[in-house]
Amino acid sequence: MSERLYTGRWNDANKPSPLRVVPWLVFLVAIGLMITWVLLSGEARHPFTIGIVATTATAVFLWSVGANGPIWTITSFLIVLVFTYLLELVGVSTGIPFGEYEYATTLGVQVASVPLIVPIAWYSMAIPTLMLARSLSQRPLIVLFFATIGLTAWDFLLDPWMVGEGHWTWVNPEPSLPGLDGIPITNFIGWIISTFLLFAILDRLPRRKYRPLALPLFIYSWQWLGGALSNLVFLGEPVVALYVFVGMSLLAAPAIFTQYVRFR
Image (cartoon, rainbow, N blue to C red; front, top):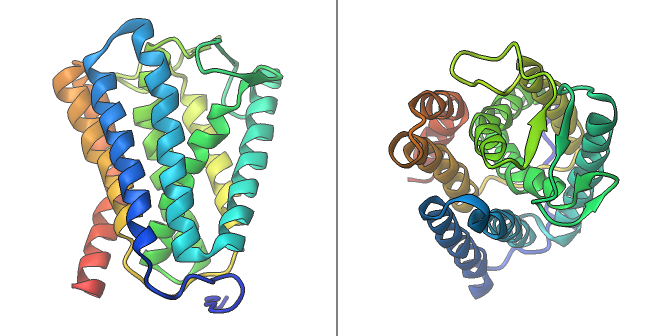
């Protein structure tokens, strides 16, 4: 299967623009919210959780408009939101594919028991993950492998934090992975299946020409290293920190190396 490069209507941001700094500024706001979140506790964290997701997703969206063009960006945004909302709706209704769980009311507005911020959270990391996976290979199966592993590994960070904050609960949390009490193994199996299907759809979108992926790499690496450090130092969860560091490094490390070699 050949790589699809595009320069036409899908990519209408070929000229340098000072607006390229805007996504970075938005993500700096997200970083500030993350740091504040770590320093707070209890219910005081809840609005910051929503703010972190919203600002990160906004940064990703704005970056993608500049790098991939508005048509690609809007199409990918809608794909992720529709796919993941339906996925979560099936999940809370039937327990498939993650296991039985339910959301609390702490994540803002819900539609049919699914907080609207949840599909946005999926988007905030799905696009950076796809971009990094695509930078490693032109072969779709390799891209799907790294993207699936990369986003599933992020859930080693996401689920312990969100379950710990009471944003969702599992009906049957056992059996679980060692050190990840309260989160069933079925959850991670469901993530592997779901992310594979999501990226199989997203990877049908045209590929862009090779360019530096500074912001997607920074966002993913911040979640990787910042998440591991926060769990180790501030949250007292060394096992979670180990899962995050090892799991997310499977995509982050080769992506960093690839970007360094290609654009040094």
